[in-house]
Amino acid sequence: MILYMLCLMLFCVGLYGVLRKRNLIKIIVGLGIMEYSMNLFFVLLGYRFHGRAPIDAQDQTILNMVDPLPQALVLTSIVIGLGVTALVISIAIRMYEKYGTFDITKIKRLKG
Amino acid sequence: MELHILLIFMIFAAIVAIEVKDLLSSVIAVGAVGFALCLAFLILKAPDLAITQLVVEILCLIILIRATIKKDLPLVIEGRWVFNTVSTLAFICLFLFFAWTALRELPRFGEPMMTVVKKYLSEGVSKTGAVNLVTAVILDFRAYDTLGEATVLFTSVIGIMAILRRPGRKKPEDIDNAR
Amino acid sequence: MTLIVKTVTRLTVGLILIFGIYIILHGHLSPGGGFAGGVIVALAFVHLMLAFGEDVAVSKISRNLASHLESIGALMFLGVALLGFLGGSFFLNILIKGSPFKLFSAGTIPLSNIAIGIKVGVGLFAIFLALVILEKSKGAK
Image (cartoon, rainbow over all chains, first blue to last red; front, top):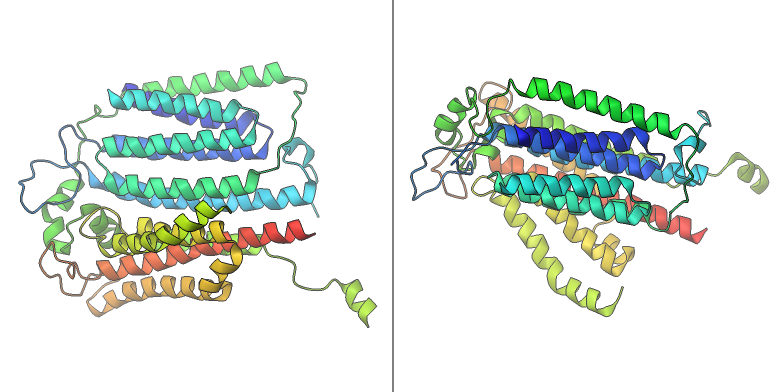
């Protein structure tokens, strides 16, 4: 229970960064922290005491294994997080060329 | 016990990453959070995820440092700062209170219910022939999700190549001048 | 880059590439799989580009070839999925299953791993080519 609450506190640190910071790179850093905390939360849900990694072995008898289904979902989520971060960084690079600053209060023009 | 220490270290590193003024230092702090997450995956008995998280974190750091080097800017604090910060913190405290109430319904940490996975664990090796059960789940039992993920990666690569394209056509006044 | 970085790169970049291919091929026997192996292959090429400059890396895989290879990887994955129609339904695992713990076992799973490894690896290298070319054109202005 304490572990779940610590994980959600990490999520809230990232959320504070997205809501309150004015620098565009700090917003992207906050987004990345939120992704990490949610991946960790999923894997925490599937852990089992005295379990084993979900790979079969040839010379040992396996008593019980950790849940492999959340691990499969999180594997997909990690790679999608990389794609999203790369795309957002490229948009930030283009915006720096056009406006000359990373400050979001000075980027007000919506057209052109 | 080690998981608690690792999570408290991650929270401190995340607070450093958000608050420090230098852009390069905040990117390095995010790298520290990612590596601690890889250690947490190893403690939670997930070796597939640890390998993937480590190499993805390295690539993400390289892209972030390429984008932020030599591009600092000085920031100034504007008015209404106290009201904004206090209201954001109040919202976050409300969110954590509701999360505490909701998380009490989950089963205890370390004793999952495992109703869906019993079938995968008992007949996974015999039905697919793969020894690694996570690979059997993502490429045989739930292969449709992997197709969706391949599509998302493909779309993001095409998007980046479209955004960062050098302009290749001449402007109309250049064509008129050359004529 | 300095001489130390260039010498170490020359010694280790081939080993990193072979390690990535090993993790892709043994995805059904040990931890790893297509995604982790593909990112390691991309990191080998990025290592070459960071140490020697962009021209050496482009001479190994040009922009056109990267774009074509990524599309071939995605189409191969879709082809393996449509192969399941011969057995009865979409994505059915129809090749021979073999006995566990051998390299040539588990039906269509190694083919899917290879397709995803090619796609992810070359796609991430194409992202880097797009980023670095932008830096150079900005610096020359």
